[in-house]
Amino acid sequence: MKVTSMPLDGLMVLEPRLFADERGAFFESYNADGFADLTGQHHTFVQDNHSVSTAGVLRGLHYQLAPREQGKLVRAVRGAIFDVAVDIRPDSQTFGRWCGMLLSAENHKQFWIPGGFAHGFLALTNCEVLYKTDAYYEPALERSIHWDDPTIGISWPLSGQPLLSAKDEAAGPLPLAMMVQASGALNGLAR
Image 1 (cartoon, rainbow, N blue to C red):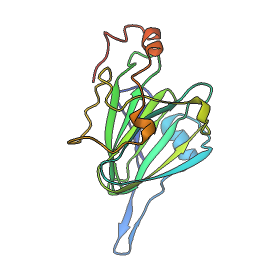
Image 2: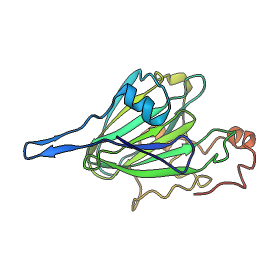
Image 3: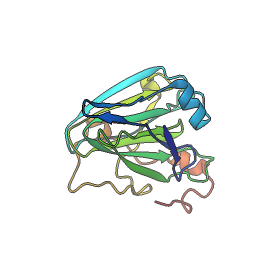
């Protein structure tokens, strides 16, 4: 497996080694020891989630508050998504910045998003997305940031309005409390 660090500290792309022949293909999508060796991080994944979306659906930007921040290992097993992580760690030099990437059934890439990031994705096609989390879902600690918050300025690859859940449509902007805690948050944002 190949691991590539992304511009925001902690984000990584994992690319498995694919074995293909006339019969089809095989790859190891996850191995706990391999993940720890390649990333230098030891995580116990406690929950697997499976999301099915039609083209044009946008899910997110979701996160959980401490002490249940969720790290997520995300991959598309059918179709393609534009997957996004937003740094919401108030003490981070990259607070408010985002990173996006294409995940597809064809490229087999996985996106490691540690706790302290908001996460969302746009379904570019009809798709199925699997993601492992290192903390259980806690409804009382779940929060959302509106997908088109101008403070963040994500360049979603879409024309027109995405399909949103009522919860995601009602989401607010990046919380002011987080921006106040972050040093230089309003002056240091980059896309």
